[in-house]
Length: 72
Image 1 (cartoon, rainbow, N blue to C red):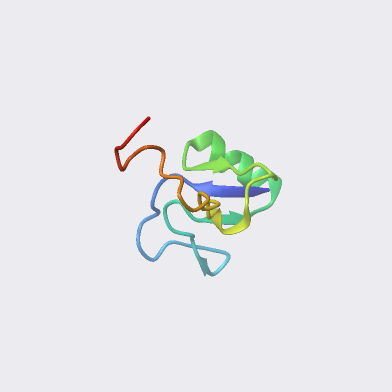
Image 2 (image 1 turned 90 degrees about the horizontal axis):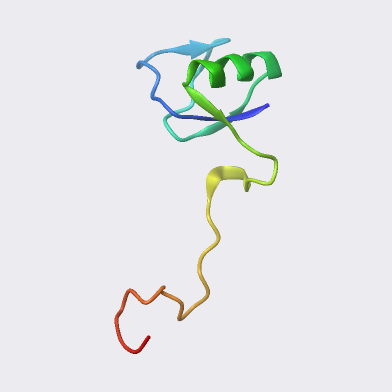
């Protein structure tokens, strides 16, 4: 199960000898562990359609959502 951390774990916290991912970072864990973390509110399930690495696709050039002002 792929999860994204919704809280920062205390510094130095490890899982199976590896440091926990930071706030907002994603990792794969066994399904039972992931379900427990989601239920505890420290992580959220990442849907399979989510791009790896959590990066968003950039808007096409010239598209700024009207932030620059000008004609609507």
